[in-house]
Image (cartoon, rainbow, N blue to C red; front, side):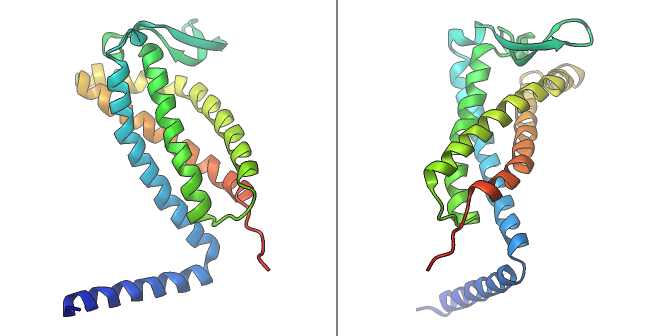
Length: 208
């Protein structure tokens, strides 16, 4: 074994020992750090997936299919306020992305959350509880959070896209930037809501 490789292995071993001591001394903080790192990785995954999936659906008739459901009142200008508000037409042309944008968002979230479920359960929380029970409550939480985040999105989606597309006059580049920002906001909401939920559903039973 070369001297360089030996030195690398020694450094890696030292780092592992430092982390192990830190985790033993601050288990809750260490768990949160791992959760934070993995969550950021999932966020990056969503930022890669979203443009790809959105690009695929934008070339279908789904972009001209209106998807505005669950009316919960009106906006300040009197227009109806929908939980899922994706008017027909591309965002660049003044629409809401239609059913194409809705599916792109939901598929991206679904893929990310499936991966997130397993990595958080096995790595962060090292749960050995009933996986089916955890999966059930995870799905319930995901549905509730998705609906809540979608309803909240109605407050910031249009202003963000308008700012980058029209105010800054960035056009299609502005759409891409706004896509990333909305993803980050959704991930931030999920991050702070899911952590306490994970603490409950990802149980670790004492082993004999």
